[in-house]
Length: 409
Ligand SMILES: Cc1cc2nc3c(=O)[nH]c(=O)nc-3n(C[C@H](O)[C@H](O)[C@H](O)COP(=O)(O)OP(=O)(O)OC[C@H]3O[C@@H](n4cnc5c(N)ncnc54)[C@H](O)[C@@H]3O)c2cc1C
Ligand SMILES: Cc1ncc(C[n+]2csc(CCOP(=O)(O)OP(=O)(O)O)c2C)c(N)n1
Ligand SMILES: [Mg+2]
Image (cartoon, rainbow, N blue to C red):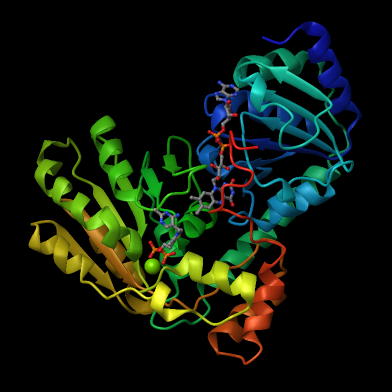
């Protein structure tokens, strides 16, 4: 636990701030009540680092959701406009999505001293457990009477939700991947657990799935390796056999190891108390996330020899193992087929044949810009390459490069 004088110094900084932003991560997983109380007292908004997606339900006021390249516009705006940052239990590595140095005063709480002050120059660093430290800090905090900052954040969250909805309904060929996740989000079972792979699925997972209390989720955090979705989901099923589990994967990850892991699922599923195990595969015949990274960096068209993948019948393969398999190929069947899949009496592979040209989107564009950009890219606008480069260049964090990762500073 931090010393009293340190708690007082932290409270001074937070009490003086007029626009407080919180960033919480996996280290705040058991501190939801304390985070909510502190945020409410300070009139703050709360963004979540990706491994901390389950730390706070997305339906609470002031929760801006994910942050970073895969994050929300609401988190981006909050970080760009705040005057104080309170970071709790997070190693969020992409500093370019935090306030600019000098813009905000900072307080950080982490159980490991070596994680303090490495992402942002913090004024007060508190070594301690997030729940205990926030609870000890609360009595020193003054409730902010002016709630306009928090109201602004709530408006920004609503605008972001409109962007998500608009994106999901842009026509794509044969299918818009955002629509699949948008529809899935409407159907998430209680207490579900999710694992996402390192590909475009991570983006849709981060943005479209709104976690409710009791849900859990993970991915390959700092390493960002391909292949974890199905094995993580199998592990989750052994740890929590009574809960529905979703593996969210790309076709590249499935061809790497996911389809093999389905053989394990076919061997073990009858031992699980609740057979609900879903593997959602985005079949885009492409190593899509890297294709977009390359386009963003070079403004060049896709380099087929390194990026293209052969087609494969993922749903059919599941059926050959005695599992269920559902293949979605048209927008009008997304909801209906998701309902069929989610009602399956055994593990089910949901194969969605999606458009690899559907562009990756940085978090900081307006609804109008975003929709115009998506449509131009999908139509093959001759200037699309330059547009992609311009739109993404400030946002493409070096997700798959070692720079800035935990322990490698
Ligand atoms: C394709 C891909 C893209 C990604 N893009 C993004 C992105 O856009 N945005 C994003 O956020 N992430 C992204 N990530 C993940 C990112 O690389 C990091 O892994 C993630 O941001 C870290 O989340 P975290 O800080 O919640 O978790 P961790 O890295 O696990 O950090 C948890 C921190 O909490 C501390 N802690 C632990 N227990 C306690 C306790 N009881 N009390 C206090 N402190 C404690 C730990 O010491 C640690 O510092 C991406 C990953 C992939 C695979
Ligand atoms: C082991 C490993 N190899 C390569 C990469 C680089 N990489 C990250 S995402 C990605 C493409 C993923 O393709 P896919 O699984 O089809 O998902 P998509 O983005 O197409 O949805 C690649 C090659 C990585 N992160 N890990
Ligand atoms: Mg793919």
